[in-house]
Image 1 (cartoon, rainbow, N blue to C red):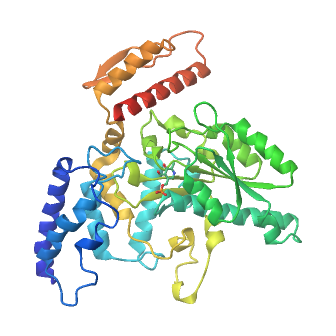
Image 2: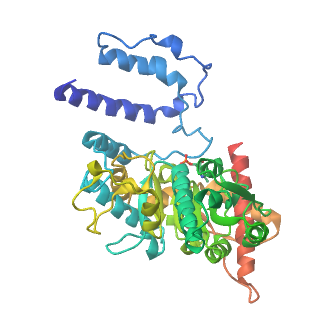
Length: 446
Ligand code: PLP
């Protein structure tokens, strides 16, 4: 295929993609195929003579589409959302065309620098504390990982390294193997399986912390286990909190858990893979209160922020914690600016060496939607759902509120009315509303 044919086929492909997405509702959302269906539809070996482009495109419909689960169908309610938008798709085309492998600043300065700035932009949208931003002189900063699983693993490995160094500093005779056998990581019993997997890969013990009636971990629950484990000679070193658990979107109480982790010299990582995008809306931002105690924080813009997979945003408070844990310096990767203190070499922040120019997708999406457009996407909910929620709230008789109409939206108002209302009443009201909203959404999906 030469450039002239690429131009023609490229335009056809854009039409094909737009047609696919515009008419996706007509396709059955879940494929009706048996395991192994595809092998019988294509030859057993790669062609010796080239196939034509037309034949390949015909086979997309014949071979591929029957076996696709259409994640972007409006009838898809499984797993979690996979974000997608036209600006992100176009940016991904450009990313493929540039095709750089931006493992170091020198390997493509724009790839590295745009990523650092985009993670600062996004961090500011979330109102992350300043210490998580790179800025020009910060000690923190962000990185795009492929998935939340990688972010959790990287944080756990960095925490492991930090804990081993800390213990050896106090007791240089202790071997690494001896310390490793005593290290314990903790997470909620409701945490995603990738958290437990990180501990498996990191070869450390992991304990599950029980949750309260709303499936959230509270400070006192972790404290109790820590006391027992320390008394048994174990070394607690890491806690992974979840904001928005996979089964029920529960939020661990990081404002209690954070100070406890800090006090115990434990690394607190926050996994907000799914719910994190919502924190760009001021009304959801309080759910992130306590992030100031965390050592690292992660969420997936590729779930709910219109940026196609893969794009998992991770921030650390002290980037030396991560860089120090994974640094390798073969001669062929060195470059003259790496010690200048002005550049980031993302190869030290992740497990693979290679990395795509993923920040382009962020840049296109952030600019084409603006913060307001992204917030509107998060807030998208029907008036009917809000009306049903209000009916449920009224019927429950636990709290009382009335609605209002704002720019055509049916809005639930929560006004602080009574002289005797305390913070705990607001918290209880909020928990009650989120619980009923969750039940409503479940009924709605069924
Ligand atoms: N953590 C939570 C809370 C999740 O909901 C998910 C995915 O559903 C993950 C982690 C795993 O995400 P990833 O596929 O990015 O590793």
